[in-house]
Length: 102
Image (cartoon, rainbow, N blue to C red; front, side):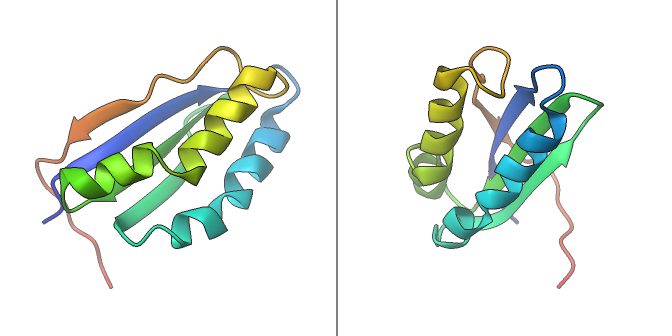
């Protein structure tokens, strides 16, 4: 069972929702290049609310992702102020149960 996760809520600026979705889709090659990522999801929680959820087997994998290219791209995008409202708050969360089908 994976035990470690990152949860990164994101708020799109008004009218930028599709661009945020496209941006998140564009990070998939970066995610695939991170070998310690067990599962990764970009989700839309509401009309302008998105989130990234990644799971890892250990803290080392989670830390590598936290300091990796996807996190850097999200933070760079947030700093330019083009798509996102404010800076995302990256949350380290523990997993207490999972079920992942092959």
